[in-house]
Structures are given as C-alpha cells and as structure tokens.
Image (tube, rainbow, N blue to C red; front, side, top):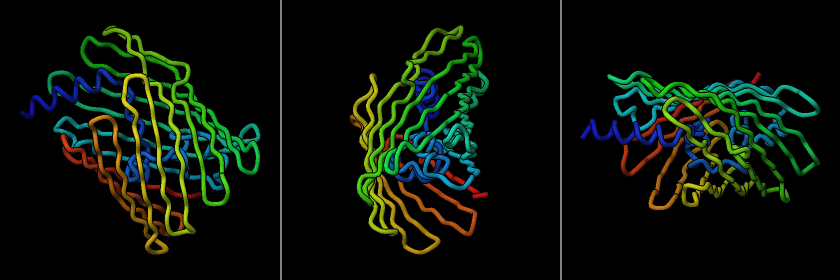
Length: 279
C-alpha cells in the first residue's frame, strides 16, 4: 500500500508540474481563498496587484510538510521579501521550491523565482504583474527544463468592507520541454471577493478555473479573538474533491507566526508554518 501511494504521488507530480502554488500558512488555512485578500508579501503570489497596499517591507518564510511527507521527503519551501519601490509602484521577490526524494530515482524539484510588481491606479484600484521563472529538476533520464510565465492581476476596494480580486496565472501559456517530453504548465483564471466586519471577522470566497480541471471553489473565514491571535478555517471543492483546512496566526510586535493544517480525505495531513518579520 505504501509503495502504491508513492507511485500515485510520483505520477501526480510528473503529470502536473508546478500545480502547487501555496506560499503562506494563512492562505493555506483559508483553503486558498486569497485572491481578494492578498495581504502581506505572500499575497503577491495570489495577486501581484496587492503590492500596492503594502507600506512596510517584510521578509516571509514558509514551510509545508505536504501529506506528512509520504515517506519521500515531500515538502514545499518559500522565501519572500518586499516591497521595494520601483517605477512608481512596489516590487517583491519570491523563491518557491517543491521537492521529493525517492530511493531509486533521486530528487525531484520544482523551483520558481517570482518577480512581482504592483501599482496603485486609483484610490480604489490596484494592478500588478508577475514574471515566473520555472526550473524543473528531473532525476533519471527525464532531464531538466526551464520556462517563463506571466501573471496579471487586479484588486479593487468596493465600498469600505468589500474587496474584489482577479488574476490570470501563466497567461502566456508556457510549457516545459525536457528529455522526457513536453508539458504545458497550468494556466488558470482566479477571481474572488472578501468581506470584512470591522477588525474581527474576514470572509473570503474564491473561484478558479483551468482548462484541465473542474471549477474550484474555496471559502475561508478568519476571526480575531484577541489582539495577538486569529483563528481560521476553510473548505475547498473541486469536482469530487472536498478538502478542509484550519489554523491560527499570532503577532508580537514586528514578528508574526502562522500555522495551518490541511485535511485531505484520501491522503495524510499537511502541516504548514509561516514566519514573517516587518522591517
């Protein structure tokens, strides 16, 4: 049974390279419903337009123990920093890595460097773009591959409590070409709305559609129960898949810590941890 799980995960990774796009435990706890929230430097991954809202520079690090590793060292790491003022807007850099190790096969790794830029178009409208540099490290005879993708996003504040976001990921339809063959990278459109009640409650809903998948719907809720503590929960539905998540976040001065746990009905638990520091 264990070998079968390894095989299924291996096939899934190879047939859907760079599908994992998570960058923070807060977004994980909210089931990925983050297009219209996109706060903090991690938000640039979900919507680069969000950089126009950030006023103080941050450093964020993220670690995800995917499906409790499945015995293959399956993990996701990321390091993000920004914003930096650039061309009348804000700029950030994100480094993402998904990797897995197999006894007789070597280490498989998906490496992404993301350069994001956001500008404030008006008091209520932001726009942003991202350049994704993908580098795939394939073990064995599959070879390595390099590709470039572009994202574009908008973020609008509707009244005082509502925000709406939209992003196109890999709008240039990039593909990877290695010795093992050619594979198109995921292209999707995501859209979402968020509603905030004062400082105590934040609700978000996201919709994501790609060519090869059913419509993905994510709903997240965040509640502030103390000045230093927020609790979160979310649910994701895509076709026959229902996935649940929860977590919490705490802030002490310039330091922040977020934790999330993702419940997948057919796989072990995924634990994620984020650390951030405001400069």
